[in-house]
Amino acid sequence: MKTKKTNFKKGLIIILVLISLVALVARIAKNRETTLGQVYHYDKEQAISVEAITVKAEAIAAALSYPGTFEPLRETRVSAEMQGKINAMYADVGDVVHKGQPLIQLDNALLKLQLQSVEVQIEGLEADVARFTVLAAADAVQGVQLEKADLGLKAARVQKATLLEQISKTTVYAPFNGVVTAKLSEVGAFAAPGMPLLQITDISELKFTVNVSEADLPLFVTGEKYLVTADAYKEDQLEGKAIMIGSKSNMGSSFPVQFLVRNSNSQKFKSGMFGKVHLNNTMSEMGIMIPTLAISGSSTEPVVYIVSNGKAVQQKIEVLMNIENKSVVKSGLNAGDVVVTRGLINLYDGANVIVK
Image 1 (spheres, rainbow, N blue to C red):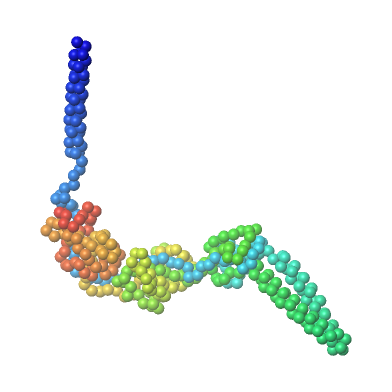
Image 2: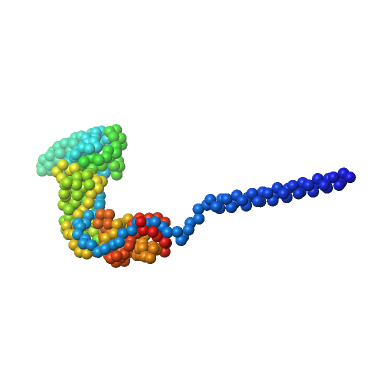
């Protein structure tokens, strides 16, 4: 009897477990259907809303300008030729200094004592040479003694000249006219050859560097003069002489062009300022211009999207130059083409589009 009751209970438990599993599976299936119903499914056939313009041939007549940065013509970090403790520094950050002006004085007390010793030695040797000269003339001494005294005097004079040169090098002078732009040591510190102590920057003349595309490179000629302005002082116009046209492109596939610019008398144009170089010549011909923001792809392979029969068609183009926020298209577009200008994020070749 007990065995029958036990078997009945086990069977009942198994039935209850199976019913629970069936209910759990059904709930999971229902939750999955609910979740899938809430997930967004992108519909490739759904039209993407974009903004577009119809391009046309128009007269292009605009002076070209290219942004760049001012740099100092000369800049160096001054160091001492001798080692020693710094006794004095005669210039600080912001001071205007002139070529040959003393900037730093190193301790030279020991060298001066050595110089005094050599001067005493020279004085004694000069007296010996004078005395031996008289005695040698009277055959009172051998000529070799006079020769030794004379050679000793010459050696002492060389030693004196060496000490004077070393003493002169304990004073550090300004290598050119400029402004102290960094103070890298202090009085009491130890100086050694090659250790930078001050930084001198010459901004009486500046280098102005721009980066231009391969297509624009022929617009610049070495030795020619161009108009340069600084963003901070747009009313002031500077004359820049092209001194270098890059022979190798940089990471952005553009070429550096460098100009030499003479600063104003007040030297208000500073290193690191931004500015523009303006071309003297202008274009005056018909061409196609589009907003630069309509161009995607890379700088070497620019593309645009053209709207044709309600679809976006990717089109490769060739850009001749940029004028402010617009680009002049050399090839790839024709008058009448409808070019997408906004809504490019989700756009792809062949997508359905609606032009606002």
